[in-house]
Length: 237
Length: 400
Image (cartoon, rainbow over all chains, first blue to last red; front, side):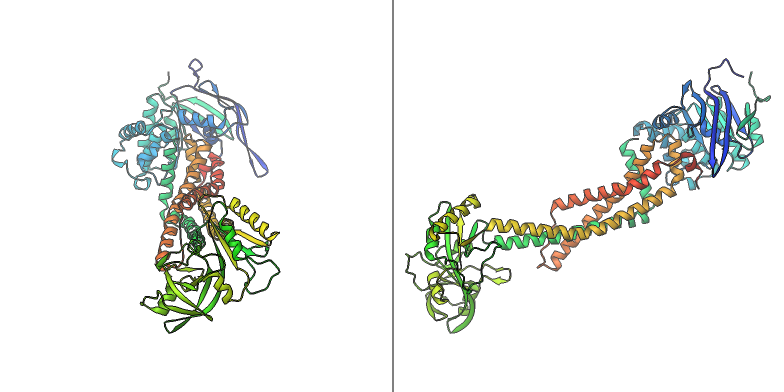
């Protein structure tokens, strides 16, 4: 493991239980993970194994019941909600299976959302949005609403939105789940290109083929990490 | 998040459901329109009544015989034990400082015969100062002359309507008319004055008070009107009048009513009426507010997903709260502005359709209406916006 590299994400003894009616569900049990900057990780496992909870935990949408989470060597388990929102805004990008685009806003306006929320002035915003539209090949679709876009285009808009503030970590929950094979392939290549630029990429997926492409594979069962291996096909030293 | 961007985002959300947003703001609009319309009518009636009473000027003090604490005066003709107000009392009041005029008054209703025609009119027994009290002008001829105590010649000044009825276009000056059993010579005609609370002020004849007392077989005056200089304090003048008459009568057996007091009381009553009709309109405004609560609650439920997304993108809970609050405030404020136009428009239409119904929309009401609707929007938005801000982002993202 990459002990020598500075740690981007460090999870130590993370526990998370949910109350479902009367029964306790152990979503995460004693999860310990070290993730270094620029890694490409696939989190796999059956439904209910805690993959999504792990992703939400890393994305600061959820708080652990026990354990410590260091993001860029900063303990984020004790932060106030507003501070968490700021960290999410600056350091974390989310990509969802169902895209989660705001239906009434155009592609450009959807990409602009994180900039608006961060309080960036309008002049600076339009420059950044124009650049993102160009980078993701969405120039022609800039003024179209999500319902006028193809699935691939929608996910490209979502990726542009997730990366416009240059986050340290990109969290993708089944990013190809709602796409056909060809478009899925296109989206995965886009994500891998971002990873190649140095962005840490964590993908949660059922898809064995997609998972196999990652350089590091984490397998979860019943809330616990059962295997954590470097892919032989990966180009990791 | 910048305020301008919040407003734009909220506006987009409103615009996305045009029909529903329109209907919601229509609720507020109808409420504001009702408040504006009703208070406009209330305020119009207020001004109308006040102007009716101030057409004689506001610097008038009325003195009636008898001490009546509840206001008004005993009906003429009914005997009272109070000492009567006399011509001498009126003469004496003319000499008080600040007092510019004091006119005795005795009134009654008699048949007036002149130029071969007969008409029943209101007869006022007054003296030379009466033009000040009625703030009326003599159109042709002259007013009643100033005469020494005890002597008053049988002259009459006709109201414009009475003159028209009796003499038509003929010159009435110098003509003889018979009022009751007495004969008078016409020396002047008053300019038209209009109506006061349904009483025609032009269907009148003014004769010397001495003659009127004789005509109606009365020993005292019905009333004395005192006019004081503009700018003088009504209370000091009223106090001076009270002292002088108490001195003359031995004790206070008369009632002083200042026009100012009366107008203030009247104005207060009318204000309460305006507020009462405004409150009636307020009920529909309340219903409009409930409409906003409803639609915002629905909107939050529909957009749970979006709230989750905004939080994942780094929105604070206060930002989410602000977004939904601005939405309801914009809805209510636009509704308020629309209602203002509607209400003011209806009030104008009413003014043209029914010129007799006094309608007046003060600017302060318009500004107040807009502010009030914004406050309603804020209050109506609080509950749904808070529920949005409290959503768990994970649950919200999962919602379909």
